[in-house]
Length: 460
Image 1 (cartoon, helix red, strand yellow):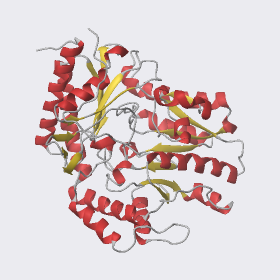
Image 2 (cartoon, rainbow, N blue to C red; image 1 turned 180 degrees about the horizontal axis):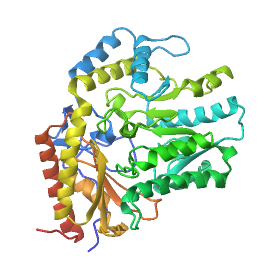
Image 3 (cartoon, one colour; image 1 turned 30 degrees about the horizontal axis):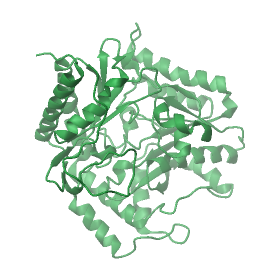
Image 4 (cartoon, rainbow, N blue to C red; image 1 turned 135 degrees about the vertical axis):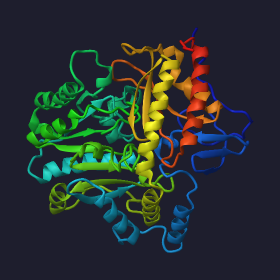
């Protein structure tokens, strides 16, 4: 039986809208949000099982953050960085740098993740020129991967569903396979697989010409394109070794995995990683204000400044109101014990999802760390045969869960040769044990409905 085509969900008629986004689909008007829940004007309550797009790390409606923003609004809501310094930006940069590994202590604020990645790509190129290596301009990426929607970020994004249309307008960068070692069916250990995937970077560098490569960008723990992909432990040290060997900058995209999401402040902290540049956003503002950051070492930044300055910038870079929100979010993460709770609730959630694979054998590859947990939906869990595209499994799961009051993040990625449907659960880091149970219960009901609709197997 074939699936129904994706369709809008709306229980009440809404007035015509002059807004447009990715489609004609309408959603109900939001009324308020608190903790892990969102209420709409028509009286429905939703569990925010994805924190929006993995943004609301400290939860909705935090009164301390709102109060801090109100205090800043009474002082100044805008101060252009070329005209003035501002205290919230200075203090947030100081505190963020203390949470970074190694010598990463230079912060450049932006308004979102795509801007942070654009900034990192441009810094890598300017560093190469400033250090007498003008032939270095390529930034190797992974396939699949997601690094943002702006043109520069798309150039290092490995998802044909997002990049194909814009191919004539962008210069796609070289890519290596993402380390999807959990799918591999060979005689290698996970440690050996990690080394094998990392060595693909060296092979690509040699194929492109080491003198032409400026950087390698990667997500320490996968995001939108790979649904919380966790590489083998051996992968990270070998990647660092290769970058050092060929004089290439290592960029960690922590836009989704950072800000305590995975049970540590940075996803790379699980492996004591030492990148040269880090990009962050989403959780550092937690949805209270548009905020992102690129953090780099003096070794990278100082030559660029010596050459005449960083040729880059945004109107709202270092905005005092956004940075005041970021400071308050950082305080609340400490006060609420977000890292510790993300680790504990993540262990519970991943165990619950692994339990669902017994009931729903089309769910496979449960993975992640902390409260960034993903899984695939497949026709055969032994070899990860994808479900037929015309079943629209990813969109149907999203819709069926939404109808039942649960928001999940679900995608079908093009670009890894498989086209697998996947989903992510990434609730706010303040979620309780009881709320995890509530969320998994609704997910189970949604998967039951999906299995019935698409004629998928169910046990028990």
